[in-house]
Amino acid sequence: MTISGSVNGPAVDWFVSDTPVAYETALGVMDTRVAAIAAGTAHELVWLLEHPPLYTAGTSAKTQDLVAPDRFPVHMAGRGGQYTYHGPGQRIAYAMLDVKRRGADVRAFVGGLEGWLIDTLAEFGVRGEARPDRVGVWVRRPQKGPAAEDKIAAIGIRLRRWVSLHGVSLNVEPNLEHFSGIVPCGITGYGVTSLADLGHIVRMEEVDMALADTFARRYGPIRRVSTVAELPQSV
Image (tube, rainbow, N blue to C red):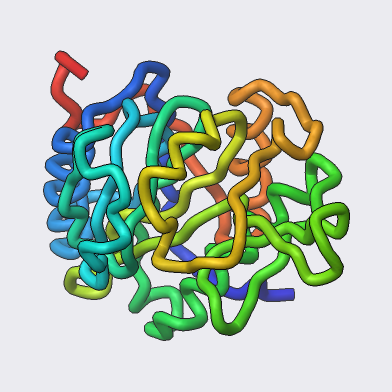
């Protein structure tokens, strides 16, 4: 059986940063790596990391959705979407993948990323769901009301020469109050949750293992690497 998004070819490089990475550094690494992937001189890469507390603004961000502009640094992300929060306790997965080689269907590619996150949450007994009118992954919260849902994972990508930049963020155990400084992704009427908020206290290493296993099932083999050539030693 062919899994949507899987391709024949080299394994995807898989790198985990064990200390927080500055947002500007991450953007620079992605720019360099994506250019090399598009030129055929580097393998695809998934990079797992955490950022210090910050807000990012996508290309559709609205000024009024930045509720607390002086709370944390605000970065222009260059990806699609609106405002998001990143910080400790949230696992970022920057996915630098050849979308053209994986079907050249952007909507299906985003759906595949949602599916990857849903598969990962299922490893911890959490039922994540996608919504046709809201990008990201959602969890039903019936204790809050019959139609209540909270967002547990966000997705925001950009394509450059058919190679993806940016990726996904999964709330493991971040400070959920930090999300109050923005209207997350410009969506009102819904809350934000995390694995810890749902009662699942797991180590980040366990989340990383689940992300790796479910990625490999969906997209094909990974190759764990000990460094990324573009990553400065000061990070």
